[in-house]
Length: 325
Image (cartoon, rainbow, N blue to C red):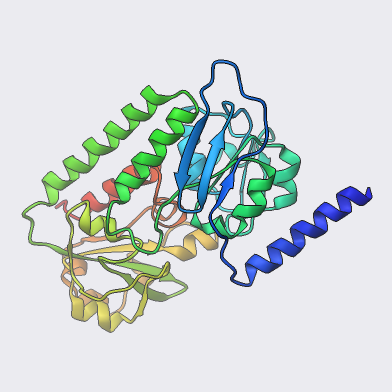
């Protein structure tokens, strides 16, 4: 290994260790000196971590999060490399595709592999924000300004804005606009179902037998705000994994509809649980249980992603299942 290569790897390791200890990256400009592509007007995008300028249309894109991979897939943009530790079923074709380089894990991408890929655009979300400065030294890096802790306000607008931005970057404006309109139509159709309905719902995360609750100010706040679902609990929490609760809490909240997100299914890579696996006397007392309105949702869409086109369409469909029957 050359001295230059060894020095580069040591620098990456030192940077990763520093940011892993909690240091937040300051907003910086992300632009790598590359010659402008003839006929391509430079595009500058401002985001929460800084400003990203593209002098040419990207040809080798690295997606360091599953939501970003889905945006590219929906737009028909080739993916040069992506993280592959938790690939949702609707992106399964990329998992074993040798032409798509494995860039490590969602929360800890392999920066050496990213560098070796020689990308001309890197796409990240807040889950990789602490690597923004290092990634920006490799290639222009664009941050998706989605709030995974509190999606109460503007979740769908943020998703559509990012989609349209990527459409502009890749010359896919018409496709992006059509996809955004499809999502709008699906949301409006869902609201026509939920508007005026008296049912109240509770969203809980299942994790190895324990439960957490998600209310109006949480990663699933958009379900209550944008989709018009009435909350069964007024508890406030803004963490990624919700507020730990007991079966007594669920029984006392007595939701008409209970949505269950099975995190264990994602982490253990196994099928989502069913009613028999979580049934207990307290849960069986709820209106949701008595009326058969316990919905075991698509864990990939709700937990692994939740901020891309494929996931949000599935989420809307899952939400509407609670209003059937």
